[in-house]
Structure formats: C-alpha cells, structure tokens
Length: 614
Image 1 (tube, helix red, strand yellow):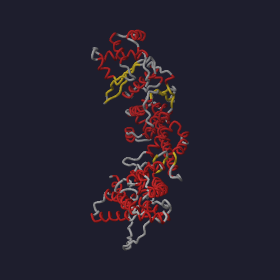
Image 2 (cartoon, rainbow, N blue to C red):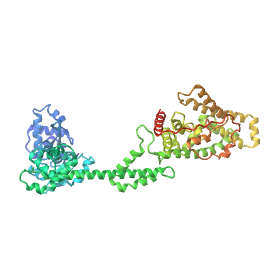
Image 3 (tube, helix red, strand yellow):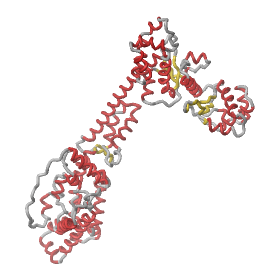
Image 4 (spheres, rainbow, N blue to C red):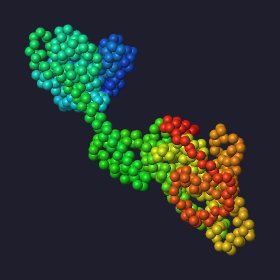
C-alpha cells in the first residue's frame, strides 16, 4: 500500500477547488465531502468512521459520498474497497490517491475479483476482459509471474500486499490473468467454484464422466469434495482431451473451461512441488542447525568462544542469503531459548562463550576443581601470614564465615568470570547436572537423582552450598595445613601461648556454623524422624570439630559428582593437615539394588523434576 500522501491533501481549500475543477464536474456537496476526506486522509480511510462524520451535517451523505467516489474512480484517483461479511458485501475503506497511482489499480483489481467471487459466471479479470471495461493497467505496475512463484507465495502464506502480478494462461488469445498478492488465496477458491458450476449441467457431467472414465455418482462425489489431487487430475484430463472436447458438438463448452483447467492443473502441481521443496529445505535447515549444535557439543574444550562460533555461523550466510537472518533467529529460538517451565537451553550462551547442555556439568566440575586448587594455594600463605602477624587486612578475610565467603566470591569473579556466572544460575546448573547424568544412565531411582546434586546443592533445594564447601576450602583445614608447615619452634610457641587452641576453636566454630546452617535449612522429607535429624546434626558437628570438610568427605563428594583429580596442593600435602584418629563401628552391609524398569525410571524422573522445581 502506498504511504505517500497526495499533494492535493496539503492544499488550502481554494487551491483544492481549482484542482477539482481540473479533474471534473463536482457539486458543492461533493466538493465539501472531498475537503473532509483530505482533512482526515490516511492510506486507508475507514468507511464507517468517515460516514459517521459526514452524516452529522450532510443530508443523504452516503449517497453523495458514493457519487463522489464514482467520479474519482473514473479519474483513477479514488475507490471504495469492499469485503464480504456474513454473506453480505460491505464497504470497508476509502482510498484517495494521486491520479493513476498503482494503489488505485491494486484495489480496483481486488474489487473485480470479488465480483467474480460473488458470481462465478462472470469472466476472470484477464487482460482482455479488463481492456473491454476500459481498465488499462500501466505495464510498469505489473510483475510477470509463473505458477510456481504464485504457489510459493500461497504455500509460504506471504499473502499480504498490493503488488500486481500477471500470469500467462496459454490460451489461443495468449491472454493473461491479472491479480494482486492479496487475491492469491482467493484465486484457487474461485477456479474450483467455477468448475463446480460447470458440473451443474447434466450434459457436462456426462461428458466429463467419459473423459475421466468415472461413473456419474463417483464424479459427483469427487466434485463436491475438497481433494486437491482430484482437481489437479481433472484439470490435467480436460487439457489432455482438449482437441476431442473441442471437436464434439453435443455439449456446449464453457468459454473459460480450458483456462480454468490449466490454472487448476498448473497451480496445484506447482503447490505440490513447492511443498516438497519446502520440506527438503526445512530438513536441510534443521541439519545445518544440528551441525552448529554439534560444533559446540563436541568441542574439546567443552565450550566455544563467541568469535569462533560466529565464524561457523557466517559460513551459512552465503547459502541462505536473504534468508540468513531468519535462519539465525530460528536457530537461536530453537537452541538458545529454554523450553517452557525450564531454565536450561540446549546451548547456554554465557560470558562470551557457548556451552552445550551436556557439557555444563563436566565444565563446571573441571573449573571448580582447577580453581579450588588455585584458591587453596592463595589462602594457605595468607593464613600463614595471618598467624604470624595478625594483620588487620588478613583478619578481615579470616575473622568470620561471611568475610571469608565474600573474599572467595570476589576472587572467583576475578579469576574465572564464566564459573562465577554459572554460580549465579543454580537452577540452570542443577538441570544440567541431571541432564548429563541421565544421558550417561547413571541414575536408577529418585534418591540417586538427588545424590547427583548433593555435593553442591542443599538437599531438596535448588540453592548452592557455601563456596567454602564447593571449592573444598575448609578454613580449619587451611589453618591446620599452615600450622604444620611451621617449624617446631613456632608451633611450640603457638601452643604455649594458647593461640593454637584459640585458632582451632575459632575456625572450628566457623565451620560448625556452616554445617549447622546446612542441616537447619535442609528441607527434610516427612519420613525423617526427629531422632534421625538429630543424628544427622551430630554427625555434621562432629565432622566440623574433627577438622574434616563437612558431612561428606572430599573423596565421597567426588564419587557422587564425578569430580576427579587431586586437591589444591596435592593429596600428599593436604593429608598432612588432617588430624589422625581411629574410626570405630561395624562394617557397612552393602545391599544389592534391584534394577528398575524404564517406566519406573521415567516415573522417578518425573517425581524428582517436581521436587527440584519447588
């Protein structure tokens, strides 16, 4: 639709009066209505709204408006658009434009086709039919087309627009069907309606029965149905027997039988071909997206830098040309956006990198293990300095659980921004852990599913544990390691002065506060008795008092989460800091678990999924 405002709209009334005098003979009432049209001008003026405006002060306003628009139509500068609503044709909009603009001819063609839609006995708006009505459309407004192009517009639902097309009919007159993009959807309906109209004649029905080699009953049934294959076959059969049909004299053939048959055959055949091509393109598109996904999922580094991925994506630009933007948008919607009610997309874009959902868990564990070692190497000498000097800047790190936690958080942010960002996305990471574990079929029941998260998350909750726990940085453990690294003399001084006992108590209390919180904030299932809860608390507190790293030992957590590798300074150096002691108790009785069916596993997944969403 043209958005260019006609020049006469900006004229003052005197200039507009002169303009109207040049165009034709208009009555004072018609001129007044024209001035009002100019004052409210827009590309498509609402007929009902404008009618209500002029009805306030003009007698017989609608009749006067119709007379004005008829005169403007003759001058090719105005037309009323209509539509069929509940079986009635109603005025919808008013178009006022410069004389002979394309927009006028577009709406005029739509009205001509709507006439045929109402009465299929009328001829289609071909070039010859339009010329008989003195409708000559300038060649520069018309785009020659073919059935495949038109069918492509139809299949891809690109049906909005005022572009004008011509279509060769291949008849003896070498005529052309003229129509707009808006009308393409209606063309097939009209041609089928025309063909059905021909079958109202019993003689024509009998003639087509012999051509199609069908019984009259079968033919009637197919004509009343909406099977595109039948209409394509019918059109093809009529054109195949065109010479014989023209030669017979018993039945008078409709004037446009062969153009209508050609349209049905060509359009529906083209529609099938376009649909096949579209399906093939969709499959290629899907495969190309899968290729991009595999580039990320199979990366040796478990992630792909944004710059590198963009280079792979740009390789698709030449193939998709003007469709590249939509290809990229479709890829991002399919792979970078999580499904409804989920937090984990197939591909996570984070800190300038792309990480596949299956790689988030190993990447997270790898980085936690690596950074945990680096942080331990940082905090061990800092602890040694703190013990020797009691410096205030170091005291601000080690004085409380909160200050130590904050310091770890800041160092993680500076040393590994990607890991720091993952630690702000507990729901996404939890889903990635479950997804990865399900992929390798590690899990058989709900409890095992929960065990996947227990090393890093509070039980029954999607909340990360303290960074001291995640990175294996027990402050009492660090102190004991630093203490044992001192010479015998300094150790003796620390013991004699009571500072060693004071530090042990201080750091032990800090660790106990973490374990107490872990126990108290855990949302225990209803089947946990108070006795079991107290036993669990006692185990946690005893572990803290003994200088261990929590309710679960480091080696146990590695088994449950898949973490591998040694601790910060190597297993031998860290082991020096452990306080030796005997472990008493009966040997554990290992019970063989039964295998669960696929249905039971899926049911367990469903139960666990609900629990982690709470």
